[in-house]
Image 1 (cartoon, rainbow, N blue to C red):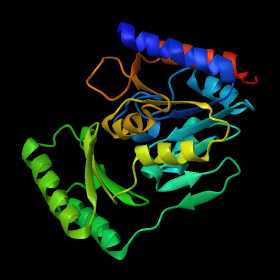
Image 2 (cartoon, rainbow, N blue to C red):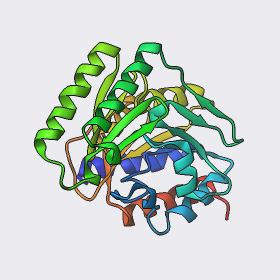
Image 3 (cartoon, one colour):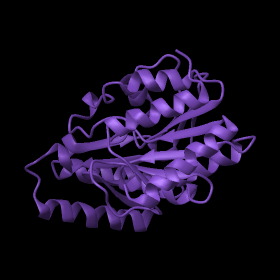
Length: 262
């Protein structure tokens, strides 16, 4: 991390110490857990679960997981008690700490488009790497090393055509593509969370992938976006942490300031 990034992180800690209250928003895959082609085995980095549990119990911190995964998957992978607030499927699902689950609405044409995309994937022999989630479908290229560039390009073009015809958006992510309705992205989740927050808490979003760029843009000027990655890359984030070591240090510092409970 360059001098400017270190300075912004130090300013962030100074602000958090002054207020003692913060909202900590974090992606899951690639941020709290390593990227794993076996998605159901992508457990948190060692030490993350204990630190997140401690922060979740802090009365002065609102901790929120914001992910493209299903909320049910995240609950199982995190294995936390209490369960934190989780926004899944890029905001299509919202699981409150009290267990209440809210889901977004889809228009008929959007539903038809998702069904069409899923059927196309099955017809092309891509069922094993296709994932159906609430409000979106995805193709996980990284799960099949034999998948050739021609089929990937055909998938991209076919899903782009379906998206245009059905009012959907195509998004690239680490190792694949995803089709979902407009308006559901991590930037809108950040906007909603910040609009709900009282007392002007210090806000931060930690993420690693392309889908996190929406969140980095949304939080700019109202908090700090932090890229969590082994290597720096062009990003809208303003600071950089290398996992897992620097990530764990960040969570420890947050806990010390905001009084996370054991």
